[in-house]
Length: 154
Image (cartoon, rainbow, N blue to C red; front, side):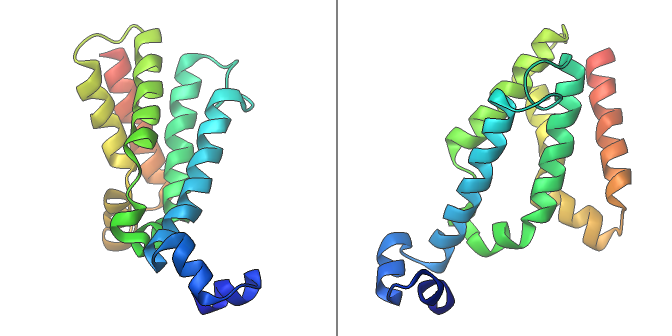
């Protein structure tokens, strides 16, 4: 907090009043990343953004979420409870994934399938695979693509 206050040219109290805690500051940084991720989905270039085929967008969503969560995992963990993605952020990603599944004519319980596809992209699962099981990120991506193909193609 001292370093942030110093860099911003304000007092430490100002930083604390704005963010309430170190965790709150970390959550604010994460929120910026989440906002950029959502903007890329809404209006960014394909394949994450509009203009690509639904399957390409779905795969891009997973690839991007894996990359972002691995990039920010220490920040996410440092943010603690304050860093938990907001309901709105989780809902946005789930809604987008669910709409892509619908476009791909996936049958079944779409909300459950959406959750099943999003779960492997979350930090605790990624950390288990990368840090404990020592999986290469490429293997995780290939495994997630296989899961997507099984859900989409039955």
